[in-house]
Image (tube, rainbow, N blue to C red):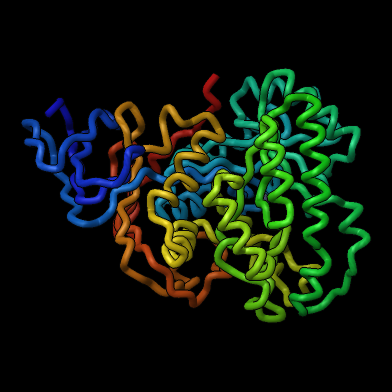
Length: 446
Ligand SMILES: [Zn+2]
């Protein structure tokens, strides 16, 4: 065996070539070799025998709202990264909005990095934001290391992050395409939204009717046309409408540089089961019907949808009122995303290998971190989650690590218990016990 400080041995290691019994050698935080299960231990190496627990690459979650600084009563780097670590996530990329300031200038990025620096239990990167008035800030932000730029096509929910109408969207896209950056988009058409029936109150059916599939489909259609014209790289955030899938599949087949994500809540929760008044289930676009969910799973299976990310977007509990029209829209699922997706995936006949592809490999690729993250392979960071896939637990919101103990998954019984999480060869959480923060702040690789 090659030199190693640490060897993790499991009968089930998820590698790019498949799941097998293996010994994973680690030196100085990097995977140096994936060896046969019974390879002799190098002298001085410490053995971590995981038995039948599954060793998978740490998840890379590219859609998290940490809200720090500015709305730290909603969430923060300390609590969010602990929740992520407890759920098997070893890298997150923070969304540019809901913090104050938003990440829309280099100075604001510096502020965010300063705040995150000593609180990050896992690795943290940053998205920038594209606003109607910051086109000139985009290239400097790109050079300062943001992974891409988020834009809204409809109102974002916070006044400091206005959405882009047609002209500003085209200008931002052209500027980002000029340095071959990535534009990530909240795609709901504001005009379709404002012409949808709107009724306030606790009925989920009314809320669902106010955010129709058609609003997503129209916005995505427009986005595809712009991306095609500029040969721009565009990523559709949190796809919920299954009706947009043929459009997406066709664009991809045509060579449009388009990627698409969806979220655990669209894959595991359905409109039919949301109780009236239960705004912990409110997010935009909304959780839709069971038949729509089947389309999303089919699209994950055939590759039309690339990846699954949490879109963890918490607020304080008092903003989750029983009026769906005015309650804060956002679902808290950071710690539960792996278990939630795995529970439904296994029911539908998918393996953990698929879950790893959707939640680690493809997300690492999306942000260009795939030389370091997203796989158990030599040369990658020794970031792991150790999972007991057949063990279950029942979600107790009070036991979760994120700041406000509200979640749409309360009371659900899920498969997949994360036994420990490792960052660059160091165990950062095991059985609810955390080390001091060891995360690094990441920048886009040139
Ligand atoms: Zn979001």
